[in-house]
Image 1 (cartoon, rainbow, N blue to C red):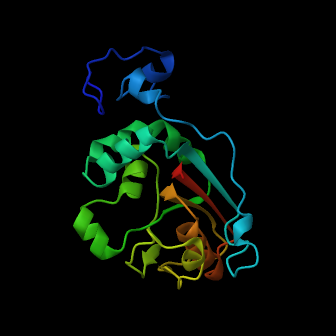
Image 2: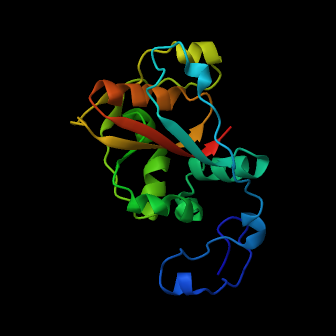
Length: 206
């Protein structure tokens, strides 16, 4: 098998978990895998205290830091449209198959989706065989990149809710967490529409 990142040929390690499909097959070599940096602690959301979004998001969990290696791989995936790289993170997202909550990915604006041709967040869930539902619509297409934290926090609401979420327990899924603006806006819209709890999981946290 060839590594999806470096193309080096490697022999996949054998295990009973893989034999019985409990654990996904390796798609990258151990050397490439070792360069990703797992996050061990959850960051506080206190910076949203005192805003209208306080309490909208119940918790946030992120899998990896945005180190130089992740930045390289993520840019290849997201901007060079190397969709196969989503398979690298199947093991991270697969546990979501067992939860009872409604899985809701953060959507792209339709114009951005047309430009990129695929949703990088949806693809993580598709490859991990996680059921999900697109209940959010993005109403703003301007990038948050380059904005100050204050500007991001004062941005008008970025999402509308397209389906009934009354009394639902929801897990939001996104690729990258920077200031938390996107997730807090999405959670606020969902809570306003009647969702009971909203937590979030992201692949990366800056």
